[in-house]
Structure formats: structure tokens, C-alpha cells
Image (cartoon, rainbow, N blue to C red):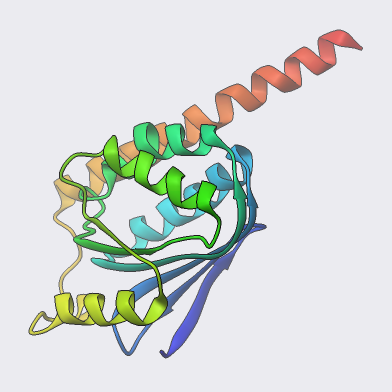
Length: 178
């Protein structure tokens, strides 16, 4: 892999693999809803810059996940993958049984998902490489059509608002309690 860093959060390192022309997402630690939401907002901003059709998504370093993360991913974030231009996601399981169950739960809520799961990096890498065979590199492709870009920008803005609203409510409640 020839990795170029895009961003880093407390739970996610996002890099672009120039050689393979895919996004490499490396999740780590305890995944709480606020941390995952912030990471996904940063990821959504990357999708606005350019299309990434293939993703290698590793949960190998995930130590724990709260169930509300699964609900949020399945209802608010992952359903918009195709709008962002994503065609294939190779999702590598967490070593924890709870993390694996969470992935199965999320996928059961997403019929016709673009996600395929794997137990190890080598198998995920080989599968994703196979899906790229014969396809032009995305950096050679034109940007999205203006209408698609506008729709994606609207969805990203809506996502930002939905994530920010509960935070503002909690802050207001804390201030009122003082």
C-alpha cells in the first residue's frame, strides 16, 4: 500500500491508497457514538472533495463498540454510501465477538448493502483488488455531476445538523443546571 494521510480523529485514521486507488479506514479503540459521529463527519467531508469508489475498512484495532453506534450507522450514515459514489466496502471484523455481532446487526438493517465482511486483511485486500480489476482509477475520472454533488452536499449538511443538535441540547441543559 502507498498510503497518504487524509485525517485522524480519536478513533479513525483515514488514508488514501494511491497504488490501489481506495480509501483505507483504520478504526481503533473504544468506539462511542460521539467519537464515531465526529469521525464520520470528517469522512463525509472527504467524500465531498472527490469520489472514492472502494474502501478498505479495518476494525482490527477496535476494542469495544456501543450499540447506539450500530443504530446510528445503519440509519444515519451508511444508507448514503452510494450517493457518495461508493461501490465496494471490504469490512474487516474486530477481534471482539461483540464488535462482530455489531457488524452483523448493521448489515442486517441494510439490505442490498455494498459491504462485504472479512476476518483478515489479506482476504479483504485480495477481494477489493479483484473488484478494481479493469476499472479506471477514480483520480482519472471526472468529478460528480453538479446535481449529484449538490445532493451529496445537502446530505452532509443535514448530517452535520443532526449530529450537532443533540450536542447543543446537552450544552443548554448543562448551562441551565448551573
